[in-house]
Image (tube, rainbow, N blue to C red; front, side):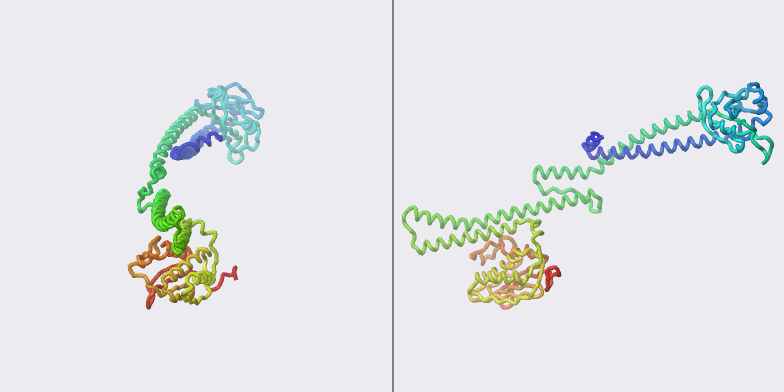
Length: 483
């Protein structure tokens, strides 16, 4: 059985479907055929029983006097005029002795049912059953009592019953022919069902074949532009699977393009600090090799430049790691965060980076669900952006009210045509390319805020400068489990 199960699982799915259809049809046809055969058998036997009832019912062939004469003179003959020649007719006594009526078709085997009927003094009903004649041929028998007297006072002849029988040869031939026909029809039906099932399986699985070919093509060529055609009004499982595949390849293609773009942009951004580092280090190395030391001021400037470039590289690598982190790694770190505390921590860092600036803050309690480290980094990036573009001695205003964080600087502002690009990766305003930075800070802000279910935007501020607005869902009080 296990070997058959393994062989079945090894078959192609269309072959398995064809086998299942054929098996289901075979079972249904077999059940219908067997039921039909038994119904026909019952009907034929009912007809035979009706005919026997008309022949041997309640002494219609032999009366009490004839039975008495037959029993007394057995095996001598008695008058049986009017009896059809094809009928088996005999008298059976309670001890199983039989007396066959002359010209009967033959002797019928006496059963226990017949003996019991002969010995039953209250026998009133006909008893139908099957038996065999002296040559082993099947016959249908009706055993009846011989009434003595008439009307309601009639009683069975004591110790005797009449067995009237007819051959079942023609009936059995009919049933055998019917069984053969049903067998042939069932076989043809099963074969036809198997063929139809195979055809239906091939037609139904054709979209799966196309999907398989598409997957194999993607695995072989890494071509993510392939799409499977799907009818717009189709909502079956195959259509849903095809749409899911198309959506998956589209997402993978988009992710692949973004990855390639990120690599290209990162390579471009890394080239500048690396070139500067290489130049400065070569100058220092040549100075040491030639034995002509650089003036102390120039050496100090070179070392400061090297340190600045290394800091920029470290910041760029950190930003790249943040942007390349999969979305799935975020879920376990999300928790309820106090936005007020996060902004306060970011303000402390911003004041260290812009000691010459005046940073004012008005913060109200607000709790939201986010990744603490990522949210603080996003707020720091916004504040760094404000510090970077603020003039020396300027002011940065920070407000947190009802879950809306605003950071306003008094710098040169952002031109209207550049606002749509400020959250793009590696995008930097032409006027800011001389300033330190990787162009990834605001991209990280946008990603973090979106992951927390919020919104972020930049807009010109009244009187000059730029105002950054961050809206995060939440509540002014912590949830009950944190209260």
